[in-house]
Image 1 (cartoon, one colour):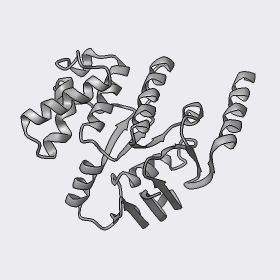
Image 2: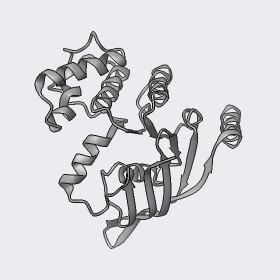
Image 3: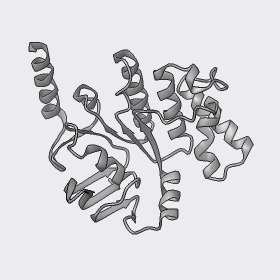
Length: 244
């Protein structure tokens, strides 16, 4: 398989007064084209930083990052932005919708930056909003939607450029359980259609839907889980939760 993401010995540190916060400590990882990968770990383990590096939203302090065959750590900001817009879609816990814009206008935003003409923007936005079940909400504003509907808009916005890679950071974190299951189902459908999906989550029961799970601790990859190992971890955590 062809690696869509490849990280080699990536470190990321942030200055904190007289000290440094070491968010990533020598992480090496490949994500193959068409994979569904979940990244789990406690708060502060480095999982969101890992996603930001893989999504070209941040740069490593040292180490190398390759996206679809291009080494990106030294690319100028303008080229990095073009790569993100062309190859990737992002979904975050907090939606990041623009309150003054309608649902359709929010979804069109990445196409504006890509230089797509108005008629095609409208057509593409309507198409992806229909896919996530919001074809009847095109003219509504974000404050007229439920949390689940806002996250569907965010997913539609991520998909409108037809990216190879979808990166989702706690996409169900602000949602109730039923709505969270619906959003997870949409991610699974996208993966079945060939989109590479990387999800960062605290919820290991959501992670069990992935093909592979990366467990992080203290800025390092502690272990990778697949199949039976993953099922055993989830079962043990669910059993512990029931005992509490």
